[in-house]
Image 1 (cartoon, each protein chain N blue to C red):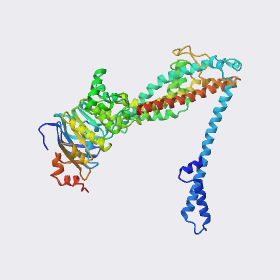
Image 2: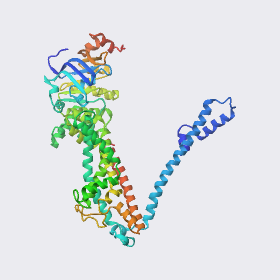
Image 3: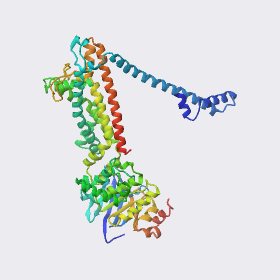
Image 4: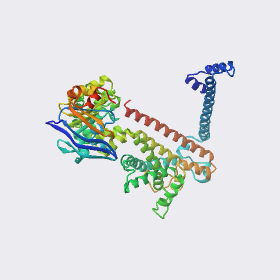
Length: 332
Length: 257
């Protein structure tokens, strides 16, 4: 790889060796300084590329080791029965039970989180970019409020998820405030709070990347600002927005802390998508319970493998969808 | 220069970006159903002046205007900008079709104004594309993305899109500067055809273009403080063959500082 890079730079290894020979052939006081310099620069370049190559390999190796280990270990228990039978609670989990209800619970959870946070996040991003941006730097209540919102979004994106969990527990689960108890509703609303900053920021970036010329063209045709935002800016930003939303699906699938303190953790799944008050257990939570509270470590690996494959699938979906959309927009 | 049939007019028009004055004391009359070219060096406020008539300068925060700008005698600054833009269309320097189908590009304006009827929209799209001399090239793939067209076709699509709203005035901001010479000529021919129904103002850097394609020419220059002002305005022939001001002569003959 490093050799190829050197070659693409217009110099082959032979050239480098040749220049070194030339340099050696000359006595020290005769050697042209630029030639000495050139040989050294090529040497440094090769060393640098070698280092970059090693770092790349190391990073990929670590990733492959983790994913590979979990998938290989998990494959031992993975079969249709494991996927389609419900888990057993407690110590019995090591002998009987699969993970079916955790798959169902995860799907319900993802659905509600995205239904709540998706539209809210995208609309907030439209507001922040299309409406609020021109007010920023101004004086008065609204510009001040806008700066606060923007600051809050940035802070929220960096808050540890367990803090969101505690907030959700205090506000939604416990009887002190709303008293919804552990369940799909508490978990979904808390999860929505968790991914809201992710969606807002991804959508903001995507909306901001829409060329100004589209907005000008739309306004010059007598469209209102809202029509411009809704009919021109939003469709053009769609690939980026969808990427943000699918990323937050991944975030929900892999999150444990938030749902540990809001979802309840029973091995039963809610009866339906609309069985909002029933508790449940997502796949990631199931891994935690299996590993910490039972002796079914192999099943934890199995569930982990499904989890990882799900995340990989989600990322593939992002790539395909956003590439399709982008090329459709570009007219290719 | 004064006209009998005035479409647009500015009187003692001053325009500021914050503290910076972009235009000073501009008095111009734009005649109906004619092509008025605006020429002048970079930074003399040509585009800013053009964007006055559809109030696109409003998009930039910190802008301020003084004086009077009228369309058919009505105060432009007193109108709702959205309504104003129904009658004053614009074509931009770089072709900027939406990432939508050709049909949806042209139908965008009428749809925004509330036309929903499919047949009516189809009629508007066909008429506008014919007017922009693009119909024959695209009639079979109206569902293709506007971005799949060539640069010159994209610009004619943008013209069709502006025409679909049925404006009275079309503002063109260097509409051919991003196009090759052949596409440029097509646009110029098109502009000539459009003038019987529309009042056209075209900003251009290209003096041959102004000489070829316009009936009247207004020459802008900037003062010491970089504020733009009108130097001379008259029939294009006169501006290019017998300018009244020395500044104009020096500019059009290329002997400029």
